[in-house]
Structure formats: C-alpha cells, structure tokens
Image (cartoon, rainbow, N blue to C red):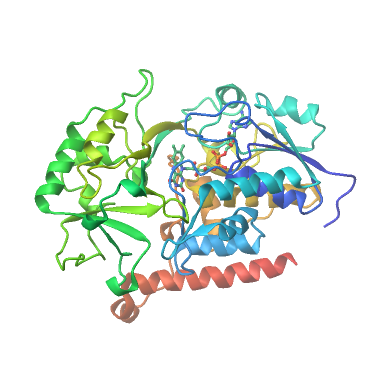
Length: 451
Ligand SMILES: Cc1cc2nc3c(=O)[nH]c(=O)nc-3n(C[C@H](O)[C@H](O)[C@H](O)COP(=O)(O)OP(=O)(O)OC[C@H]3O[C@@H](n4cnc5c(N)ncnc54)[C@H](O)[C@@H]3O)c2cc1C
C-alpha cells in the first residue's frame, strides 16, 4: 500500500477498540495521537487509570473455533489484534473461554501503547473531534469512546451526528473475596464436563426451596431508581438478575442459574439451580458472580447475595451496578466502513457503533483501523464478506432496522443449506459447525485476496 507523506490519525479513547486501532495503525507506520480522558477523571464504571479496562466480567468468551466468538477471535488474530495478543499473555483458566487477569491485562496494554514510538498519548477529554483533528494536524479521527462516552463529547455527537435517542442501560456483576467463601457448600465443575476433569467454575448449587426464596427476595429487594428523565433500557442478553426475577420466578433458572451440564453435584445430587463463580485472577483470590449484574442497592446486594449457599459470610470486593450505555444508529449515520456521513474525516469504532461486548468492540477497532489505512493509502474502503464474523457484525449494525447492540452470534451469519439427513445426524450443532467451516474458508480466501 502506498502512503504519501507521514500520515497521522487521532484516536479518541484508549479502551478495547481504541487500543487495538491505535496499535494496528502504529505498527503500520502511521503516527497516532491517542487521547484518553480516564487519566483526568474516571467514569462511574472505571476503577483505575489504565487503558483497555474490563469494567465487568474478565471473560472475552469462547475460544472454540466452531463457536461464533471463536471465529471472531481467529479473524482478529489474522488481523494482528494487539488486544488478543495481550489477553493470551495474561490469560487465567476458564474452560473453553479466554479470561484474563484484568489488572495485568490493562497494565500491559497501557505500557505498550505509551512506549510505542509512533504513539503519542494525550491525557485529555475530547469535546469536539473536528476541532481536535485540526489542532493535532491529523487526516482522520477514530472515535472509540465506548458505552460511557463523556457528556461533552456526547453533546457534540448529538449536535453534529445524531439527534436520535442515544442510550440504553447495561450492568456490572459483583466480585467476592475467595477467602470468605464456604467451599464445603460449593464445587468446581465446568458445564458439560465430568467431575473428574475438575473445572474453572465454582458452583453454588441450590435446592428448590433455596432458589425460590432467593428469587423472591431478588424481586422484592430495593433497587437503584433510574434517573427521572431516563427509562431503564437493557440489552436482552445481559439482563440484571433482579430484573429476571421480576419477569418470573423461573426466568433465572433458564438463564445464568440453569443447572444444565452440572449435574450431579459433589454429593451426587441434582441441583435445582446454580450460581456460578469465575476466577477474577490467576491467584484465584477473587471470584465474580457470573451473570449477576444488578440494579439492587449496595445494602440489598449484600443481604440478598449472602443467601447463596457458600456466600453466607462473603465479603464483596466490589458490588454490582448499572450504567448508561451509549451507541449510534450506525445504519442511518455511518457508511459501511464506519465513517460518519456528516463528517467524512471522522470514523467511529467499538461499542459506540452498536456492537456489544469486549471482543466485538475490539474487533470494530481493528476493522476501522484497516479501513482508515486504506483511505490513507488512497484505496477505496473494502466490504468484508458477510459469511465471516467481521462481515456479519458490520452487516448487522448497518442493516438492523431498530438498533439494538449485539454480540457476535450465529444468527448474524447467513445460514447454510442443511439436508434433512444432516439435521437428523447432527442437529443444530452440526449446522453451526458448517457455518463456522464456511466462515473460515471465506475468511481465508478474503485474506489471501488482500496480499
Ligand atoms: C457497566 C458495563 C458493564 C459491561 N459488562 C460487560 C461484560 O461483562 N462483558 C462484555 O463483553 N462487555 C461488557 N460491557 C460492554 C463493554 O464495556 C464494552 O463492550 C467494551 O468495553 C467497549 O469497548 P470500547 O472500546 O468501545 O469502549 P471502552 O472500553 O469503554 O473504552 C472507551 C474509552 O474511551 C474513553 N473516553 C470516553 N469518553 C472520552 C472522551 N470524551 N475523551 C477521551 N476519552 C474518552 C474512556 O475513558 C474509555 O477508556 C459492559 C459495559 C458497561 C458500560
């Protein structure tokens, strides 16, 4: 690719998307100005000034090459993802998933970005990307400020890019101190693996009576009210546990508390429901409650979550909460390379484009950096085949009528022809495998076409 003069790009936000985008460009000899506001002021979900902070679970989800998340990761690796590279170096055991020690992960991202000779980090809150582009002498800007974009920038976006509704809510799960758990009531086991294989997940099984008493308290407990001018709007696959309880007594039992793949427990009994805990770090000194994001007040969280077997004396390292989560209507406001229609020098990347999840957000950082590099080299933007994970995510946000952030999942990839015999032989699992195999093939030939 021909690049004339020394190109310079402003990346706003050193989260997952911004960090991956900045490193992708810097490694290809583009000068990057990386602006980050958390070093000036933390938002309500952030705990430290490091970049690439994972604000809730420490899991980047499945590595299985035949899962949708596994496919996306394989494609990101092929695109030289810095975030995945660092995640792999700081992984903690989590079955088939890629989970990380979040502190080491963020520390390494920060150190590498700050040390890169082509990256200049500026500790500053962005207010007006166009004005900043001129101030820093950049050709392009990538806005990767995530679901908690600060108010000053959000006001600019509302004024210059979109006057539409621009928010919904998301939530954080609590983390407990491992030393305060009663392990005699819990057991290690991953879903769908035998007891002998051990496991990375710690399970707190519940009887029928314990479960219904727990769910009843969840539904009745005091919640933090939404701000008066905003309604709660949650992402359906990340509902607060208390909202599940309000929807019906059995909702949680068919979601994160399902006993499936865990039976029987350590005593040979079949749990009625289960709470799963996952290691927060390699030491196993802290565990987060999987799927237990919540709107409960802090006081009520301590009271109700101590009803979980094994957590009677639990000490909470941090409690759950809910936060505003901003995203754009990409279909209306952006081109397929995620460039703003109203401001052609400005691109958006990460969760703000309408994807959901750590890995998906980082992947959109890579995608946009790739497209910006093409522009710098005088090339037209390139569509990724919809059969690939990258292509399917972009296709989703660019075509969905009523925007609703989405994780990568097989529902976003086009279906494959499936005979009745295949259905009988392998069912849904085989179908997913066929879609995954096609995605791998299409991606490989797409990638070879770039060389
Ligand atoms: C409360 C909450 C819980 C979540 N839990 C999960 C989960 O469990 N699993 C999961 O996969 N995903 C979860 N998500 C989604 C997750 O945050 C995102 O998927 C991911 O972090 C988004 O990546 P990003 O790079 O787009 O934004 P972020 O990682 O949020 O990075 C954006 C960066 O931009 C900076 N910034 C913001 N405004 C400005 C400004 N004006 N100027 C300069 N810098 C600015 C921020 O400080 C931040 O560092 C959660 C989101 C929230 C809000």
